[in-house]
Length: 343
Image 1: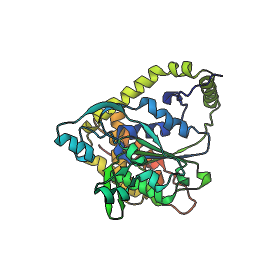
Image 2: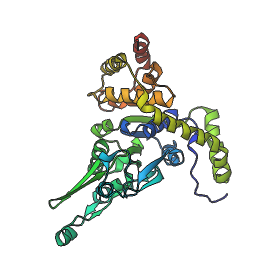
Image 3: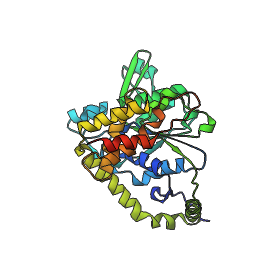
């Protein structure tokens, strides 16, 4: 067996279609507010997230620690704003990355720190960046997110929602851009997240081990093939990886061109009411996910199949239920509602 640190190809993962789709949709549209993947150990959760690295799209970024977007001056850090005023903007080619957050990370390690002594002596702010600085415009991956300190989870979700990380110490404050896709994985057997925190994830997917003998056989075959000769295995999936990466890049360019009708909004509201979901976040996420799914499929108009796909990913974790009761969607009922609708 050869020793190789190459990543298992995303396109080589057998089954788990909902998980793969949820991850891809969040790459296409970071405004979906991330995805939580729940499932028993050994169901390719971590493998899938780490495999994203090879299919993430390229981009332009400014030459700063936050990789600021040249096309979004309203979200530039202080260094980039100063560089623009001085006519000294430097743009480099970059790529979206997967940033890992260790489960034992402290709040200071996550948000960064301010050197108070330096500020008092020199009269200027000195910021030591944390993980949220590195996460800007990238994917922030938290394995075993349910074991993370609740306060740290709150900080992550607040930064993800606002797109900004703010630090204040001893009356001194500092803020920097921190727009990222939050991906959490967890095994429910080791404890759950608070319902309020689960709701903050745009999409949630529950994954299980494959029950089909042929699929399980293929899982074994591919994994052993990868471990035996990683380079050869990865090369076999190069074409599929390239094709998927291009599909994602095309979808990102198409996203702003996708349109939806007033009927789509009414249908989303009707589904949410019928399914008994809490709050309005479900309806809004359902529409945003439908738009993103349409772009992924290469279309510029939301269709019924997009709403079906979006409902499966954005509603189950928001359904009102009693303690210990699972959120299970009656898709026959949703299909009936959609079939009657005129979009």
